[in-house]
Image 1 (cartoon, helix red, strand yellow):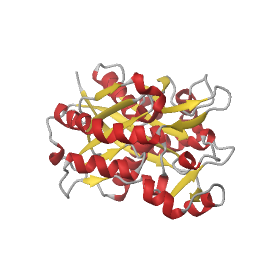
Image 2 (cartoon, one colour; image 1 turned 120 degrees about the vertical axis):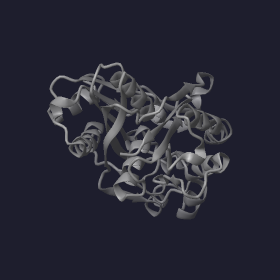
Image 3 (cartoon, rainbow, N blue to C red; image 1 turned 45 degrees about the horizontal axis):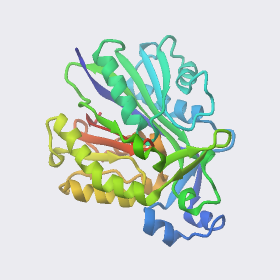
Image 4 (cartoon, rainbow, N blue to C red; image 1 turned 30 degrees about the horizontal axis):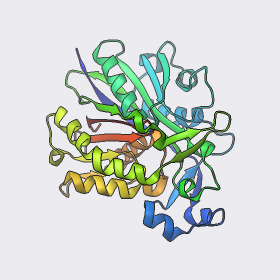
Length: 314
């Protein structure tokens, strides 16, 4: 079976920037309060008429162009999202239609904030099995649609955006084995509640303790599955939930100074399933990650679920 690699990346964010000072006019908060607890300074908010499909298609178009492929080359399209309003056709099918992808299998995947890394593993397995030679994997969220703008503990966290990756078959594996799982007994710790008007809610302290105490071992497992240690990495892109969680994870992994640590949460907030591909695409775009560098992707959240793998930077 062939391996697969990331051939190209793309990302897209809405034009509107919502600052901490803006939020201070809406709820009882301040720039100092938000930065101290979360590290977040700004987040992007989509326009009312800007859909999850719009965000996903914009990021996907950039990734497809970067890969230099014809739309007809894509055999699989999957979108990781938990904020899609449309049940059918899927966001993936809508993206395929917009990009002129004629006959790919297309489906959405909802694994909360761990969605993109989960979808990346599913696409990698499909390529390895020969079901597709090229796959388009997208993480896209419009979290502003599910934000309770009266709840200062959650509304300061969330933002909108999308990131995408094109996977291509490769003689050498550029995507390592996935370390994934869930703890459904604690699934209510991060949730979208209310069927008719879903709202994001979480047990913030419980999630922080879980992420910082139990997940470093899973991150090490993902490295070990790729035959590496954390010290061998060139970069790490975790779910951009909270800068304080990222800092705690990095400390426990004892990473050397040369390892590039994604901190896109500062300017983008928590974009759920979009956060890992969005942050990764920006790092590659800026040249912060050299081509060929091993990068740990590691996402966690609603479910409680997690998924991570080491990839080779395109």
